[in-house]
Image 1: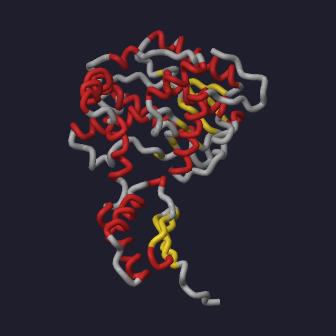
Image 2: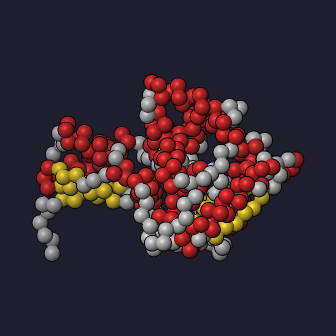
Image 3: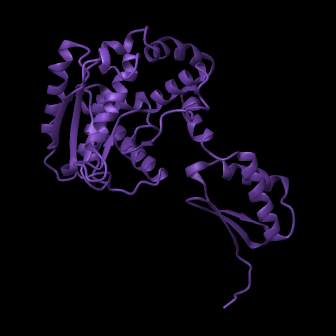
Length: 317
């Protein structure tokens, strides 16, 4: 593992630069003010995803959170004897190398009445959330916990919920914000994460359960997605985009309402090309830009929607 640079503000490499910019962009799109306030936990298992998140923010993330406010939290699930020794040591060494705080806790054993769910993965998830709630929030030691769920996780979750008929009921997929938990990697692919680990020479642990085809995620990752990508190369991106689309108002209703308001402002109907451009702007999400329309009218994006400005109205002062 590379030692920290002597420079006050080290510069990331090509992959790291793109990654930290994407993380900052995601926070801004989700309307989270930066830098984060208060003490921040980063949940780190020792795997590549969370080790990359911790290293990226601890070394290059000063615009996201000051390194002095970060504590790396390792949670031991107790599934494998070696995990109780090797993984927390790796996370502790990373924290020491970056000058971050470190904390480790063991989840209650998954048996008997201590089970939160019959599914071991779901049981572990619910227990992690309990620990997060005891540590973060108003009046607690920490304001926020960051986890390393990424774009591929999102795609797998959407596929799983679709196959179970739960896609609409459960809101599509993984949320960026859940109580005090934030997920800054949701627009970052697994390939980007591995590229960063290679660029930085970052060491991490490979959990053997991640390749066990008896588990849905491992089965989907190893067998289903490679087959789908032969015909639909962008399938992961497409699936990962669904939660945002499902949580938006009906695009048809929104287009009709905004179109009617604009036509009232300019006193005449919009042409077909103008309606199509308007449709594109309404579906652009965080990439919306101002749109000039006939009659001196401009459609300007704001946080909660759009503001229609008639630039030709006479001064009423």
